[in-house]
Image (cartoon, rainbow, N blue to C red; front, top):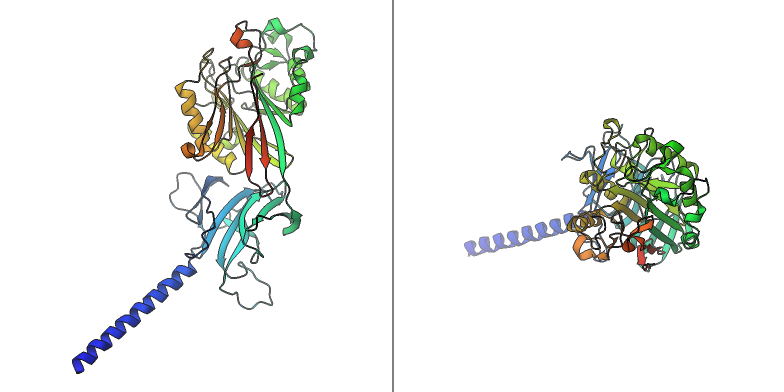
Length: 473
């Protein structure tokens, strides 16, 4: 009998111990956010930030001081689950903040109203904003930490200027604006749309020039179409010069600056300059071209003058904000016609040779822009189909985050394709070559021009869709 009692006692103790272990495990799992709703979409992000990079993975955010580090200098707490992160200078002080959508226990963040003695332990959503501060041991400084959100949030997205778009589970989107020392509800979000047109090679042979300072006739027949777009881009194949003695034809082009004025007057807003003729006039040509287009108030991409910093990959990005949509434009070339790049200006022209720099630049843009557009000078001249290198490069650009790839250099029109999400994780429209926008080349296929025409739509929830509209002209 005694033996039987002892046996049953041991069984009871074992059962009680097992129950305690299960309850303890359940509480720990709950405390460390293991039982969050299934509707949550968990984001993954890796990009340069501050002087290092950040990585959001498996609900945790880490910051590293150097890309070669394997140990983070800051990591979100284990009892926090980070749903998504946005990098944005929300307070417009010139420094980027990290805006996080966070799940944690308690109705308040690290700070709570003085009249609240204790934080509760309910699992709630919050928006926390941090700023990189190298002087701090933990690198990140809290800037603003919301109390619990009034509704369950599906997503946060960057709004225009100093605003954030917050979308709840009923698909209602709200605009929060940074005012003074924090975010305040502004009202309902609205949809934004912009039309973009991209042209191919503007290749200026001397036979096109009449020797005057008025070259508007070069673009008269097409300027109306260009001006209809909200943003118009072109590859300026030939570098500009302000010295008449430097005007020249193939193989080392020099185009009068007044042609640049006619191009801008025709309606172009963005001039892409990374191509095989970018160094035809050395650094003088690049300096002159950048300075002239800057004076005309238009954007350039793909080259850097002697007074510009280009050491970091992010320096290769041209940023454009239009009607609530932020666009990153990058321009790269696969060839420089064997022209030596000056040692002291090794990034004078952005090239595809340094794929690590290209990859970093596009990833940086992807984490901060609504849309990433990449102009690439590649392929073989006069070939009607893209070659294997073009396709491989398109895959690399897409994988890193390009939304639209616009090709130039073959001087003839090549195919257009869409790289689906299943292949790269990111859908990308690829125009392998738009042919010549303007040239004096006599081949029939070199006189066919195409345009890349598409609409960028930013929904009320901040989500971006790109609608392809173009047809060969």
